[in-house]
Length: 128
Image (cartoon, rainbow, N blue to C red):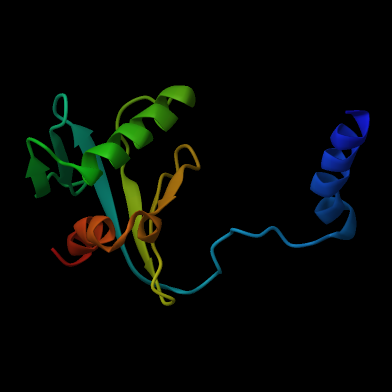
């Protein structure tokens, strides 16, 4: 049992000792488009996405994936004790990545990881 525990610690520590770059990090790329959004929960599953100026880009009684992202963002802000509802950044990169980033908490979501339909729900908001 001790050998198993020691082996696990060695396997996990090896990349740190050798200076290996972390895997699973998105490749850096230039930003090609960016927009600030305010995600607001309106009830159980209802959600609205607005510009900081108040223009409504998306509103639905059942927001699906947009609601899931809004709930994740709300949770991160609760943990970090962020007051209010500051805007997040929707960022499109040259390599095709689409990311939602919250500068207030450091939270982010790589939207392409959730499939093309879910990514498209946010990508439409870049051009509206």
